[in-house]
Amino acid sequence: MSKLKIGVIISSTRDTRFADKPAQWIVEKAKERPELDVEVLDLRDFDLPFFNEVASNAWVPTQDPKAVAWQEKLAEFDGFIFVVAEYNRAITGALKNAIDQAYVEWNKKVGGIVAYGSLGGARAAENLRTIMIELQMVPTRSAVHIGGGEFMKVSPLGENADISAIEGAIANSAKDMLDQLTWWGNAAKAARQNDLAQAAE
Image (cartoon, rainbow, N blue to C red; front, top):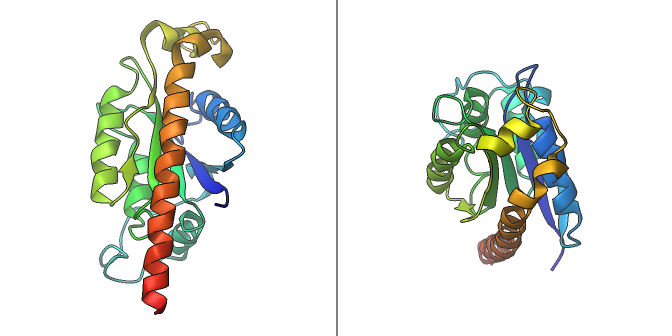
């Protein structure tokens, strides 16, 4: 089977965000796997409007050209890794808006999570998992959680060390998440291809 194309979505758009550090780390880990083709999708680069369509594109074609461009980009991928900041026990507003700008482009694709915050972004990760289920995605069971002392070690709010300083605490979770991302990504890709074949008959 051909490589899985995976988009790494950076979900924070703040000027002083921490997200770039874990995003680059997980990109490097994913690129070590010959079965994955990885590309960063930075929400800063898409300038998405607040959702203002008649309905989801599951029901009505989207009109805003920036949202259409986002949908077209998402359609290129077999799955995603979300780099997730926790804002008030949930994902960022920027990520929720970006998710809501599409629907069919998320369907039958796998989603992994790298989350960070005082509790390792655990509540944001659970929030995102329920959203992925509604989008007919497959969320991986394992995720990477950077929290507590590890977060303070690598965050600008603390020691601002390189991610390698905490790799011993998070590397196994990353491996599990990427293993599951690959397995479910291939299964979902086969299902999508089967759907296309049946539709062409």
